[in-house]
Length: 404
Image (cartoon, rainbow, N blue to C red; front, side, top):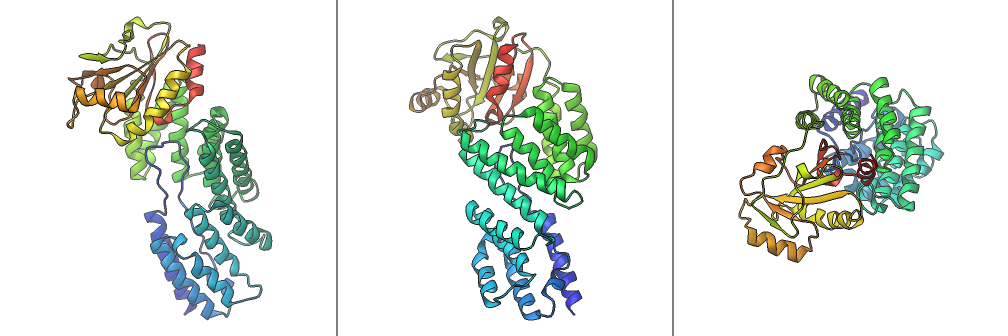
C-alpha cells in the first residue's frame, strides 16, 4: 500500500516540476534561475512504520505544491511538534520549511533552518538541495543589497560570495546530484551580477561541457550574451543556433529566436536617426559621432518599465557626461502619446538627456526595436556593439568601449 502511495506522490511531484515552481523576475535576462526541484526518492522509507506522520506529511506537502510552500510553513512546523524526538524524516520537513521561508523572502529564517538541517543530517539525500537553497538565499540578499543591477556594494559582494561557496559545495561534493547543474549555473549567474564576466563565462562553460538538460541550454544563452558583448559574434551565433536546434523549453527557445535575430545587427555600421523634432539640446547625428560612443535609448511615456528606468538613465547620463559618451533617446508617438505629453513627461520626470520624436517609426525599425525599453550602443568606429533591454547594461561594458 505504501509503495503505491510513494509512486503516486512521485507522479504528482514530477507533474508539478514539469509545470515549474518558478519565481519570475520580469525582463531581467541575467537573473537567477528560480526553478526548485524536490527529490522525492525514498521519502516513505524514511518514515518507516510511522504511517500516520507520513500521511499527514503527504497532505501538507500536497497543499504546498498547489499553493506554494510558503503557505504551509506553520503546518509543517506543527507536524514536527506533534512528533517530538529525533526522526530521520524530519529533515524532509525542515527542508520544506526552509524552502518556504526562502520563497517568502525570509532569507535569514531560511538560512537558520537549512543550516540546522544540514548539520543534523549530513548524509541526508536533501543536503545538496538544501545547499542550493542556501545559495539562493545569499544570492537574493546580494541582489537586494545592490545599488542598481550590476552596481554592487560591499554588502552585495559579501552575500554573493556566500552564495558561490554554497553552490560550489554542491558541485564539488555532490557532482552527480540532480542539483549540480543548477548549482554550477548559479555560480555563473552570481559572477555575472558581480560584474565578473570572465568568471561567469568560465562557469557557464562548465555547465555546457559537463551537464545535459535545461541548465546546459540556459548556460549557452547566458554565454552567448557575454560573447556578444565581447564582440565574438560568430561564437554567440553558434550557441544561439545550437539552442534553437536542441532546446525543448518553449520560453527559452522564444528568447533565443529574438536574440539570434538581434545578434545579426551587431558588428554592422550604425544608421542615422530619423527624427522629426528634438526636445532638449539637439545631439550630433550618428554619422558625425566617430570617435565617441553613442548610447541610444528607445522608450515611451506609456511604458511602465521605461518610467522605472528613467532615474537610472539620468544617473548614467550625469556620471558619463565628462566622457566621450553621447547619450540620447528616441520615442515614437503611439498608443495615445503626443509630443505635448512627451514634453510634460520630460518636465515631470526630470529627463536629462535629449529626446527625439520618431513620428514615422523609421529609427525604431532601423534598430529592430519591437519591445521597450531598448538600448543600442555604437562604438567609436560607428559599429553597433550592443542591442538589448536597457536594464541589462553594465557600466563596465560602457567603460570598456570608452577605453578602446
